[in-house]
Length: 315
Image (cartoon, rainbow, N blue to C red; front, side, top):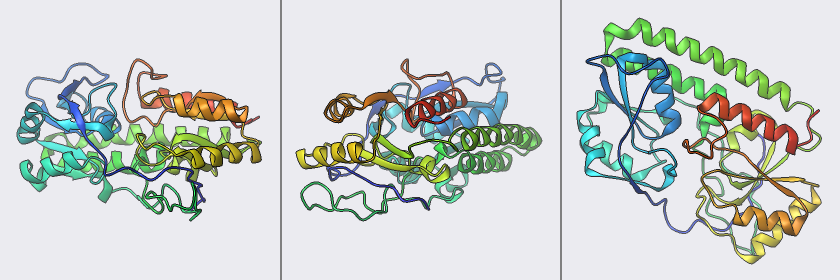
């Protein structure tokens, strides 16, 4: 595992979930066919994989609507009803506690897929053990990063698991599900090669981001992540932490600090102003919005690659 540096204030409390209604997500090949299976995804990357693997045989509803932070969703009565009637629910246990609670009370275990049981989730948001911000040990130290889909190879594991689970709940579609998964996995393999090649020659491998959502990307492509805030993008760094990250940026000659489309840029812009760096956007792809640099996972990931190559000085 590559080492990551966290420069962040402690998380304030647990992850809080805030409201959104269920949102239908149409498959790229068209509307679901009559009688399509009602399936639910907890947030965008899982919903996108369900759409691609399920095709017209599934009707996907997302618990996190476009533009919402998945960390910050809470479930409405309609969301709970969608869960209860669904043929399959795909989620990541531990990422959205309210979703976990609703699934445990509303969904038969045979109709639920927790991708955390199928993907290698062993990369910590930080493992440097450093003491930042006036002697406080940060709450994220050692916490596992949930954003596995930013490593295409781990995302591929989730895609395969979704295909097998769909095949179990709808055996008549098993061949189609597995074929669709194979196609998507091939695309992810190509994407992984593009990242490996594109980031091989960077002059700077220090990745400074708004919050530590990029541990899997950093681990996969030999980058060293630093975060202004922790696993929760709402965590506010104190003055000592801000000073620490400015010094880190200067010491490591970091020229670009990466903000996110769904999070305020105020902190990253302050760090950039104090350190002489510039601000660019790196998307953790937790959801789609008008600010997204693409219409789907692959387009946004390739936009991320372009931003990384420019900011890290890759030839």
